[in-house]
Amino acid sequence: MTYTNDIIARIHRLKSASFGSVHITGTYKRSQFRLMLLTQESVDNDHIVRLLARWRKKHEVWFPALFPVSGERTRSWLQKRVMDEQDRLLFMLQIHGTYIGHVGLYRFDFARRSCEIDNIVRGVAGYPGIMQSAIICMMVWGNKALDLNSYTLQTTSDNKRALTLYKKLGFVETKRVSLVYNKTTDGGAWEAASPGYKGSIRRYDVYMKQSYEA
Image (cartoon, rainbow, N blue to C red; front, side, top):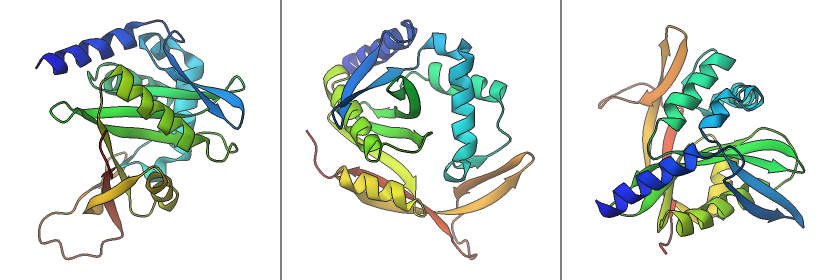
């Protein structure tokens, strides 16, 4: 419990800092990039909220739930699903003064000192290979700042680009879960197929972990 409470308190302090004061620096082809931690101040940053909403809409096919995207809905998500979550961190990827995507950490397994790589989204085209560099940079930081030993992640079987990226990073598949698409009042959601489901399966959740642990 000491490690768990310490990390939760550490994450809370990080997200309570002023926006821009907590960042990780990395290098991409001799250019410096920064991973800027979104903090409580970010919720009131209209530019950040607009980017998150735009990128969510652009890549909505890869998210488990589909719904009408708006600025206020995104702001609410940032507050309730990122800031208020005790074990979630989200970083904006910035290079040459421009935000081009985001990467995150979520769902700590405190017993194993492991965490899930989360919300990997490229918002702006270009800079081939920078997402791989950003994830590596974030994982190294997680090892040092949060005492993490290993990482897991989850993606979908039809996201070939993501699967290729994660394999390059040393992740291996551990299991697949059949998914079915269920409509909702304002969109739909991909959910685990019920036992005995006889319909066709077009998508799977793919769970992966590092092929080694530190």
